[in-house]
Image (cartoon, rainbow, N blue to C red; front, side, top):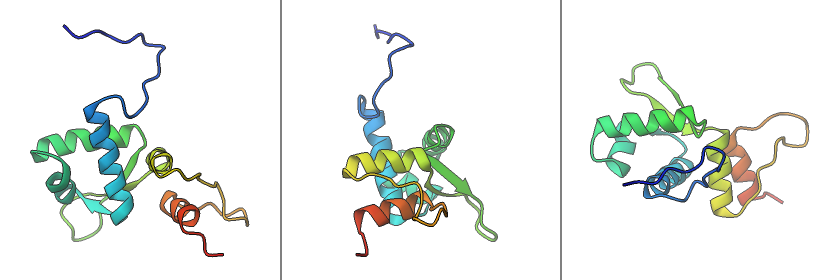
Amino acid sequence: MATEEPPDRQRSFDESETDQQGLSLLLDVYKYRYLSVTQLERLHFPSKRTAYRRLQALTTLKCLKAFSPPNIPERIFYLDREGAELVAGEMHVTLKTSNGTGTQKTPKDLLLSEAFPLN
């Protein structure tokens, strides 16, 4: 019988195997910048149905965003802010909120500028 956690307790992202799989997926999206459902399925899931269900959950949690480009029959996923923060934590880097001129950067740009500074 599974024990339920109190609703006020915040789980960290790495407490379960599912969360480890989610973090691994986010790291792959960071590494490749954009991945299709099919690519993510091949890398992380036993079926397309499982992939869609988990990707929807990560999108709802604001870890991923998706778009449908013209002439491509499936959605493409990339990191959202929460996903970028989780990846940054795993990589032991800090996200910045702007590039110094007040212009907002994308999560990928923020991670790259922190992990690989140009100066």
